[in-house]
Image (tube, rainbow, N blue to C red; front, side):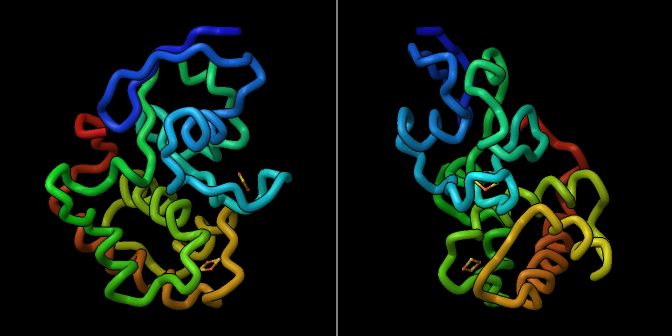
Amino acid sequence: MSSVSLTVNGKAVTAEIEPRTLLVQFVRDTLRLTGTHVGCDTSQCGACVVHLDGQAVKACTVLAVQADGRQVTTIEGLAEPGGALHPMQAAFREHHGLQCGYCTPGMIMTAVDLVRRKGHALDEATIRHELEGNLCRCTGYHNIVKAIAAGATAMGGEPPLRQAAE
Ligand code: FES
Ligand code: FES
């Protein structure tokens, strides 16, 4: 067993885990943060995206021990502590950017990272290109693209690459 200590959604966490434990298994099975999903076993779907030190990663491609000493944010950590949705979450709701919702946490975590890297005025081609690692079987992507463009604009008050509130 290995000991890991990291910060997840602003809270310090320490656990004894098997060294082979994936980060996605750690957040879902050990921490019971089940908003992060597993949609494939080939690292293609993006349902498992979380932020590691503020950057989007597929949590099925990272060992939990690789997150030792680092900051992880899951979809559960995106809303305000009082419950107000993050602007990107609100945009997905307003623009019907989901149907079954299985891909949605990963889409939103990817989208927030995209805005922080590329700014608030995102064109459709950029959004579609950046979503190549996130698969959705339901929506046809059109409303997801609209939601991300709107969410990016709504995040306008947030400086790019903000990590302090992670
Ligand atoms: Fe990670 Fe599909 S579960 S990419
Ligand atoms: Fe169902 Fe995307 S909304 S997989």
